[in-house]
Length: 379
Ligand code: PLP
Image (cartoon, rainbow, N blue to C red; front, side, top):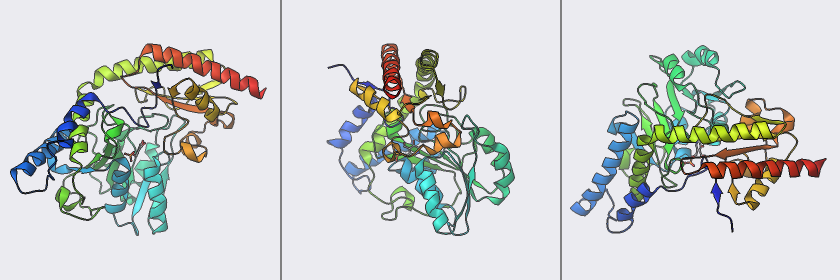
């Protein structure tokens, strides 16, 4: 059997070795609840606080501005539901946000909140003039750092400048970006940021949220007094220490990983576009996550191509992992105006530093064969 080629790192990543080593003691001998009042628990609490400090440093935040949670979906829900009064609150979100933001906004609208949707251009970049126009009359603006489907990196720094010295809160979903591109919450003027460990080599079901000091918010999950009363529930100690180890590894190696991934990505893009007629790259050429290839082939069914890839032991996806099952045209492709005869034939391949050039070459060959076969079948 041929070896698996995994190119779906935007859906999730392999747990990195540093994260596994970090978590083992907390799965075995260091099992105390960190809220306990004895040395056995204090030791675990110190490890949780060290993880908090480490992650704070990686985004240039203070330790008391960081909260642990279960990941991106919880963070996005908390950001949108608990910082402003939902009733009468005015929100602005980009049209290409993840469903954790968009479906939450649908719910907020049903409860009386007013949601405005920010257009994006053909590369998926938000309209900054629109943001300038609405900023004074908006309580919270939410724009992702990088898109999960097409990999477009948003102009977060420019939005941060627009919102500086305004009362508007600025939330950034950095689930796809943190660990892959630099994030400095002060330089970018971010008030609230959400991230998720399993997108950067950490475990699933754990993440963190940054909240700028002085920004008042209600807890989203009420319960015990963990996280200074802002997020009830026993700490996921194994997840938290493993997330910090993965974060450190990714941020420390960021430039090296980035350069390597961009090389692989660009070889793949140029081979696919030049060797397969009627193909198009979606998203931005320049402002693009290092490992993202989102490409459409005219007149074929992307789902069928994905099955062909799967038969060849290659893992990729048609859209984001969260929307691939509902068979609807992706809201992201719709927002960037991908022509109708291309949308159904779209696949996303997301590489990381664990992929190699041989895999890239193999995947290009299999995609070429698959597209040819599907086009022959339909002609
Ligand atoms: N936001 C973005 C941009 C994502 O890509 C994802 C997951 O794919 C999420 C939020 C949800 O994160 P989680 O899987 O940690 O709930």
